[in-house]
Image (cartoon, rainbow, N blue to C red):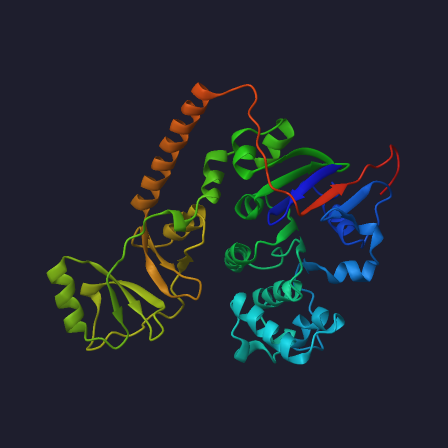
Length: 385
């Protein structure tokens, strides 16, 4: 196996069970030593570093978080900074920064123990621990595989947001091709024996699979899967009327009638949406939060696939969009998303026809990989890894 991972990119390792995804990942931080070949990080062979020193410079996030049960959330995150000799003030500041980054209030969660957290919260702490010492390279082994689908989507969106801020080099193992398409800048598709079938961008894998194995692995519906490559941030969403809990219902209905508005978004005191209702159906004197469960919303970083899925369970043919801390952003309708898809398709067709007309035989794509993970492992024939 031979490949190069550019700095600051997320590369997803996918393939059937037994193809060597996790083995390959573990060789990067020497949990498994390669039997032959070399692995370099930033041009330096990892074999020249002590295993413990190497691992302290590489973040590691695995399924379920795998937190130390006898340690608090803060102590779990501070493990590697403690091994590196950070002082207490610097470590505490870093812990709070990371908890806030993964969407957990430091004041509320810092002193809790893992048993007091949900599965999704434990996984968030696991991600924070992997980022604690600010490593340039982060390894993830099925990081979101042990949580429910709704929590998994939220964790994926959180990971995308973190990566936009930090631009780490992330190598992630997953069995889910949809997750790979959503998170990866590049995808490595392996077959049994660690054979590389295709190493390419999600767009190219969907549009031009290298062979039948890749076609079968990606599965049918590549046009639908391409919805995972576009995000709500790319769509011009509507700014629907909002009301606050406690507002006069008479005033709300009068304003709605005067402006021809049918539906309104109800916000709490922190500006977070708690309901999406027809103004005429509001009852009583003051607007209340009458929902027995949380309103289903979609993060602005979510894919169009996620948004359409949420719309299927909505009675409005639209979905409320929120920001990174749950604040109200707007409302995305089915028609807005379909218009964006059509415009994107037309733009792609235009670019393709233009490229066909101007193509030259010596086109070269150059990427800046001055800092990279260079992974070279050449197994001898018949040798077991």
